[in-house]
Amino acid sequence: MDTDKKKILDRLRRVEGQVRGIQRLIEEDAPCQDVLTQVAAATSAMKKTGAAIVSAHMKKCLDDSPAASGKSRDEFSKALLRFIDLS
Image 1 (cartoon, rainbow, N blue to C red):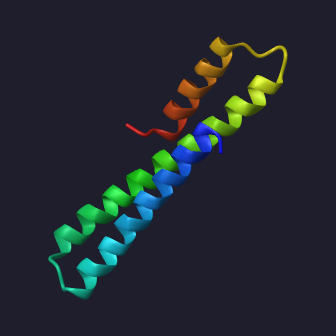
Image 2: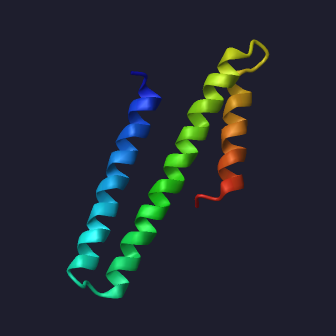
């Protein structure tokens, strides 16, 4: 398994754990602010996972192109991250 794929799967497993934690909080009637804090964390983690997926895909696609350089790939990745606003 390549490194990017392993990292993405690891991220998804962490998100899965976060979602199970949210379910547990709701089952235990945790305070709303605690539940919402965890929902925000899981949402952020999913956005970052999506960005990692797109980045890995673009790296592969751009690496397969003889005209693409590492610099153009990095510039594209930075622009894409700005576009989806993960700050």
